[in-house]
Length: 257
Image (cartoon, rainbow, N blue to C red; front, side, top):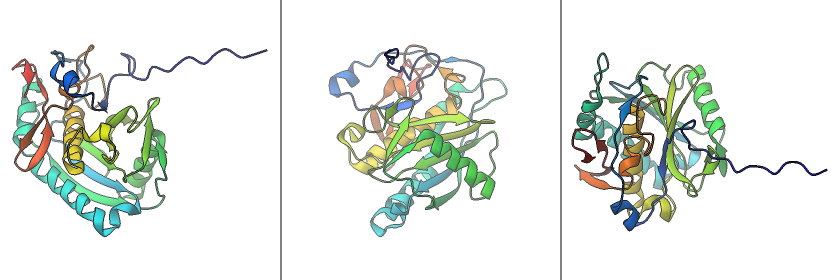
């Protein structure tokens, strides 16, 4: 007797809040982006984010790629005390004032290698193992681990895959362990016409601002129709210093700024 047909999984619903950088939708869709209204759901905020970068794979130690790693660490050093973080201050609430952050360290993890495809559960396991080993700092209320993957490595999360359904995401697990995952911007849908490094800083800024204002997706600042602060403005970019960053939604301005 045949089994029941499998239902198509719906990974991003109100029960599974939007937490991804979507694929580039095309210029017309960007121009028609809907206005939003973020509301605070009572959850934690990262008031002085402490970013620790994790570059997974020996690919990052190759001479041609180590420069990207160095530039991404410098990006965090510069951006965490920039105007981009200042504008998030409007989402401060009583007892939780959002201010500047810092990058508190970096590491390259080469064992195990990520392989051609890696599940989100494996990334969570890696983070937990490296915390236990002392390679990553113990988590606190502001810790945010940023995991970067090599070019060509597919990440599978929430029923979708990188370069097919998303270009990055953030989430939490365990006792409020906050993390973001950034597959390398190696496909047209995740570069959106930008140079690879500019696409990486844009998508990284998207997830950084979302992790600060909604570290447990759907429990911080969230819009039931449009998602998080970066989703409303996805793929709208500006230049900040020497970097390409994404615009973020401002309730105060009623616009992407």
